[in-house]
Image (cartoon, rainbow, N blue to C red):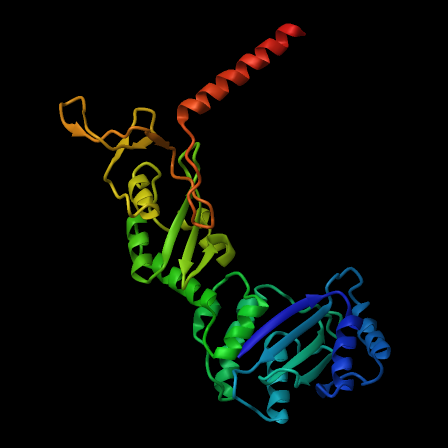
Amino acid sequence: MIAKQIKGKDFYGLLAYNQKKVEQGEAVVLDANIDLDSTVEMTKEFNVVRKLRPRLSKAVYHVSLNLPPDENISDKEFIAMGLDYLKGMGFDDNQYIIYRHDDQSHQHIHIVANRVKLSGALVSDSKDYERSERLVRKLEKKYGLSELPDTTLERRAALTQKEIEKSLRTGNAPFKSILQQQLRETLKHSDTTEEFIRRLRSRDIRPKFNISKTTGRVSGISFKYEGVIYKGSSLGRKYSWNKIIKQIDYEQIRDRTVILENNHPEQGNKGVVASDTGTSRNVSGEAKDAKGGTIQISEKPKYDLGGAQKDGLEDEPFTPFKMELEDFDQRKRRKKRKRKKK
């Protein structure tokens, strides 16, 4: 079962939406503890209690509980489940209406509730995502529903509507949830950057590091999984590069080679020579190094200032270091000429 929570400001719009579904024969009211009347009158009743917290912006609580495909429960069980959910989330003294919608292929209910209790207390929304997911897992067991894996219990970026619909349609956990679970396990068992990359690849996850072409520093990371590219930050704060390096032993200079080899596996170490400036260049042809050894020299060497990558996993063109110095000198000369004119 999947629960999708939304907090809003306007009772009227949400009630009007559900009432329209009822009028069209696509929804029914299963249970409520307010007088069922017109949308305007029900809005007034919700707002009477809302005024107990006049400074509260988002007093509207809306959640949909979506059953797996081809699984059904009775209206009586749906009411009991809805009340169990409300109580489990702290809505034990609040106004509510439970609607059953019949506009989708899977069974689901919508609950409209007031975050302000009848006593004037407020239902906390602290960690409500994690609390909801743990509660849903318990309700799945209680009502004999198929249980989704616990990949959803960690703090992460919320699933999109399309991902939720696809999960309900196929009965499988969303790719994003699976990828988050894989990353969590990989980080748990990885001590070094090299091990982190190796374990990701063993799980068919291709990491790609975004490297600044001016400083050579890693500025971000993306993951390609099941043909889809996810930015680390889009999976949740825990999977942004700034958070990842706090969980593994990473050093920019030491790990530079393994990161570049990961980004350019077809190149490996072959034909890459470090320069005195800290850059590196691709080489072909033959020449002698300082010790008399043979090295490969290209006709048109390019300067690799870190192999900067776009999130789309495509290479950005390399910028010669010499050109950057020339541009810098030209800017200095222009500024100097301007000062003289003044």
